[in-house]
Length: 263
Ligand SMILES: [Zn+2]
Image (cartoon, rainbow, N blue to C red):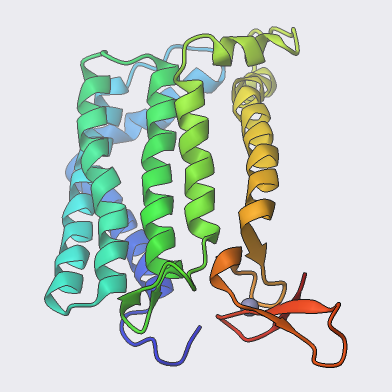
């Protein structure tokens, strides 16, 4: 990264968040020792049984998500207090979806949402995290937002996930893609439940592949990728240079690492 970027290392902050996540989970199981039954229930469900520990699952998710939201809010507030644009955006990228997740968990608990809707909503929440996090990581230089020299990689990935979530939430899309292979699996053992899981995820992979190919086509028109630092930048924001002696070899200089990008 650039030398004039001060402030927090976002990668170590992500590691710290993982640490807090495991501590919260640990605290939950220490204070709710009867919650261990959830592992037996999960194993039984994988073998085709009924998962009867939903209440415990909701309690764990509610406890952990609330704790993480507090932690992410603290990160955001520290960023705002220190006027650290990158940290504030990074905190918000985690805080906003986790706030929504508390709300979604409540809706799931009262049975207001179907499985597919839950999964699509989770995808949209992840996409919010990816877009805001992509802005924090790619667009902030020297504590200022700069769209022109920004790296769009994270933002584009987030947008693809958002499209995927929005597409799958449309009734019928998932069912159409699910019926394409024409195989039905009945859960009788661990192997068949893994096959079932793969079958259920397949429509998402198919749709994502399609979205990826379409966006790839669109991004190649408006964006240019630096092969050295892997940044994806707006084409029009970079001035085109030409070698003095050979006018035909037009090229760009990557505004992030200075490497030559051939056109
Ligand atoms: Zn570069």
